[in-house]
Image (tube, rainbow, N blue to C red; front, side):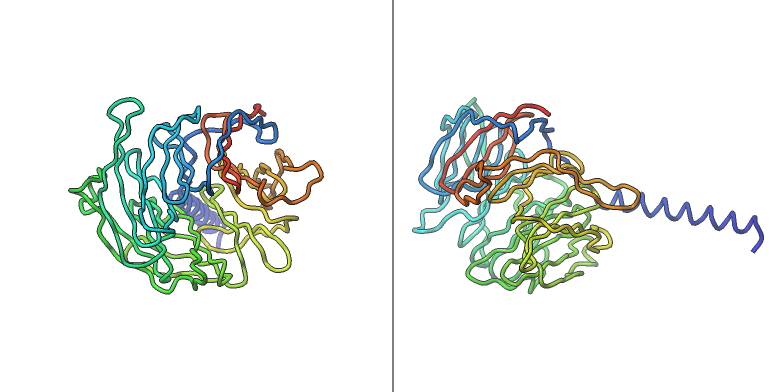
Length: 366
């Protein structure tokens, strides 16, 4: 091959490489947090707290209110922890809310032990909240998964090892109402083995794929849900017992968990689905939230920390920005443990502990 042909081939290879990189960047899209948090969690100061008679779960910011569930009741509180609205979501004895997520700024999807309910909440006057039940979906027990996916599908999952996918009847109109409800599209069967009513965890990879894990079967999976012609399980790996996982950029997913007898973090490429890096960690770290691209907060029974993910000369690195221990002697205390669940503003976050205490912390910048 003469020099001109070599140069031409080299140019084509470079064009192909650049096309591939651009394609991967487009197909795996990072959805950044709506609010950029600038506070240093290690410099936190407790400014408000309130104790409830049960475990606090499903903590979100919705319509500028702090919302959460305790047992089967949904609460709306102001940032001053003044109660504005509450609603009993199930009247059945011992039935708790398993999962609650936001579909948009008006609609909430709620999973309980027997069904999924979709509500619209309206605020026609300040601090005056009303609700409307839009739809109920049944079909299995313990619908512990409800997630709006990046292409608009609603994902539901229970203890029957089946992931169900729904879309709006009029998918060109994203307004959810009694005239535009969700309808079943397809399902993926035999996802994770479930014992003792355990529910798998899921992360939408924002590229037509879902990453999921089951603690009971120590298994991780990747499923294709879009386009419809490629639906199904495309990767399955045993032996990893995850605590949780989260996207840290538009290309990589961070997994945190246990591979007996040690704790690890793994970095997965969302396109190739390969594990490209593994770190051994000293404790049972759990991914909390993404601050901005490549910077994330995580916590354990002992501490809370913020790391930055870096790529340097083809290698993958994690740099600890700050860390703080819950106890001065650095001992474990399960009930004192908390993570960063959501942000009230750029230097204030909201959390709860395992004793039913809701807490608001203000943080210094830096």
